Image (cartoon, rainbow, N blue to C red; front, top):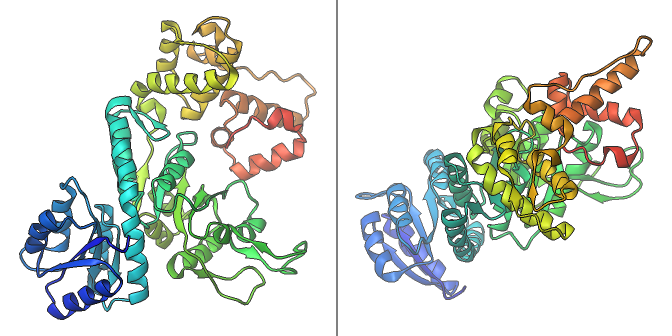
Length: 460
């Protein structure tokens, strides 16, 4: 990596020469250009692995240079040099594919770290090119499956987001595959050898959430019998995935925002300021702009997370993706269960394409896993599908029958369990239908003391 080629584009001669000397002293092969047009010409001959460019230059500015270099098959990484007044434009450049930006005057330590990380991006880009081939020929992007226009746009943004250090906000209905997308972004980043740490903000009680994220010192609160590292420390050097971030209480969001802005925090009960290098990927099943409007998500946190905003479309809006998804899941379950099911018959495919899939891809996966276990043939037939699933196709809704004398608590339990059955054990969707929060549903299920074997299949 120390032999890598770096091209500097800056119209300020003093800055340009200083950077050239600095990078040369670090062992890199460095070329320089006084504007974007000259940089583009030199890039075609010099073939740099990294371009460091000023944002504001004559003839061709940094954004235009970025766009021109994106069309180059070599696709070098690019770092933007910017003043305080053009940071918003620099962030826009990151959305367009720049690796990162650094403000003038340049912090030498930060520049060296960025240069090293940006050069690691080359190997990542090779993997991305392979994934582009998969999208064109197989309708897949890593572990994500789908070839509709909505998914292609999602892949395009993932491809831009993955090699950078910028925060990512993924939003989509429950079951669309947000965590899978987050893991794919991590796997395509220079951080792929470091930890990927997921945390579900909706599944952890608010009293424990801050401790889970920040960690705590011994004696910080009742029950804190020893020191514990939080998710940020565990993910140092890697990626932290905050699922259902809009379920985090607003005061906790404020503390989380400070970590994002400053890169430092204290454990609960601690006095020492800790610094971490963590890439943030967050997700929500709500429209984030609407969540801000409803007071569920802080506006400043939303804008900080939404450098890359990725929307995963629901399955009902991409029904053309059902056949390749079915084939992908059948391959997985044939291997897992030692089966040899070739596919689904025409009747089953019709059922699948007519269904609205409230549980999205997760629901399809669960239906197919059950079907492949019960089928006796080589093709899955409608009779292999769950009875309540077949009933829904004919417009029937599973009935809830209550006998006279049923208590309110028993009726509530029956309604909740029937709704979970209706949503194929999708608790988030069930909570929406019932008009209660996900945490309330968790609490009620805990109170019913359901055996682990009967509730283990319920999915977030």
